[in-house]
Length: 230
Image 1 (cartoon, rainbow, N blue to C red):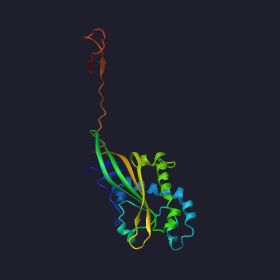
Image 2: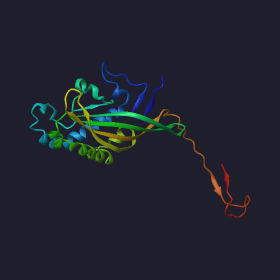
Image 3: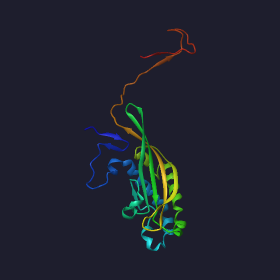
Image 4: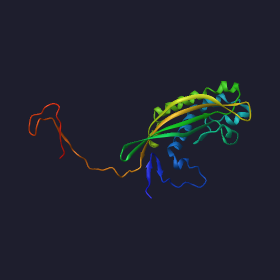
């Protein structure tokens, strides 16, 4: 079976370890973005987060880093009590638009949605900690615009272009208490290369001479084009 390349993904996918998520195998671009974003958020914001959360009391378990977990799927508030770890970042594909640039070169424009979700907290703690949300946005935008923090992570992941285009601030209601999860909802536009055929590009070239003339061997005149192919 022929293996083809889609951005950094392979089709058919490589075989992963048993019982491991398919994210890194089937969508390495998304997996790489999650890892990069989580790393830079924690690198830039952990000190301020730790200072603001040092007296959380019963919520101290949440106070280690500003992004403890990363998820490659949409987060449903109804499962928050059972499966989420906070604070967390989630990123998933919403849609793709395809364009065929050449016979062997496809291009995909992808809409990505993201959520930065904080632990459920009182109004007092929201007033103290909620400001981390715009800091997360600025941190990601700076990281994307500089193509990384010393390493061009976009090129490594096979990404042509990436933008953080829209942000909304709000909260998810915790179903078990009156506390709410402060949330930052983000929209990204991602452009990926898709190369389903990496061996079909020809090496031959065609040379064309373009002359402006009234007839063969005549003088050149404006507005008349004759093309000859050697």
